[in-house]
Image (tube, rainbow over all chains, first blue to last red; front, side, top):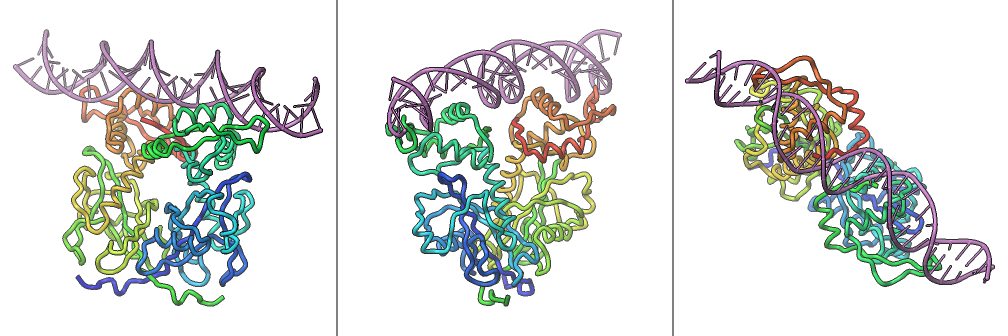
Length: 229
Length: 229
DNA sequence: TTAATTAGTGTGGTATTTACACTAAAAATG
DNA sequence: CATTTTTAGTGTAAATACCACACTAATTAA
């Protein structure tokens, strides 16, 4: 079994990371301002090249860590982009990954010390190369996924108010959802635990906090089942 | 804007094609017996390397054409596989594509003259490299897709019996479906045209033939909506 | 004490899904 | 010619899921 592939073309393979977060302001995405050529000074997804002895999943993790310091973020592969001139410097194929993370757990200082910044998805600037296309694709996937199965565990803090969860769904799906129907639907899924604790910051009355019941939540994810709001 | 990427590693990029078909025997997949190293004589998906001046979608079409002579097959990208030793000869990343096609339209002679052969998905032999994994992944995707939106147009002959369509769904989802509920659901989708013609080959009574109403069918595909059997 | 704000809760109508079994037509057989 | 065999074709009722919709409770601020 020899090296019989020697005449084949080799190409550069990159990964690009699309990181979604959520806070009071709604759905966010993490971008960097490039301090290197090409396209220095423009906004971009976090990207880097695959190394010879590395699998794509690891490359995505490494790239994300380089720009943000984040560790242990599970990313899912989205799509592989191969337009001939997508990178003006040299033919590069790029594999996009995306993840949902909790903004609070990945604090702002960290991001300041690195190069990344959160943007509202509704206010994303023009991005380099085909990154706009990647982002649009990722949002479509996130919406689709959200309408099919519960999300939220990854995006919300440990303890959260029902109204935050509602707002998360409204942000992702970009539409209003009836509060009562939402609550009864979520409750019927049986994936939340209602705590005795109340959050008093935003209202006179205070609102109960919830956490996800991790086991039940994961079980629901497995038998991929539909949730329609 | 210079070539600033010169120190980065380059890799071989391949495409592999997973082609589904359907006939009386159920759901089928197209494989080749390799007549070249490595793994000569073993069964495998149809694969080939990406060329420098080619996009992935085109590479997949070219590869499929090489092994089968088929033209104009629309393939959808599935996933990109990058395990370090997935190809024992040299580090190769592979982008898998899949398609659904109509077996009858792509006749057996053609396949004989080339290298490919149809296998029942339930009787697929051991495949080389990580092709088993790719196939399993493709089947999962096909099932998921089928439970979300109508399939069939690509897999059935121009004119078909309701019982064939039912069998197609049963083959893909690998479960029994109630005939009456299936028919009323399909009818409610309003994507079939009932012909005056009957097929007399398999029954005394004969059964009506149908065709897909291409326009309505495509419209349904666009607003990706759920169908549960 | 009054006003303002957010939390929290329930019902009824409609549409969808599921479970379920018999008759009709034609040909093949004896 | 009567009987058997095979597949096609059809409907209903019960259960569940979905959707639209509005008021009260609690608390604090003014």
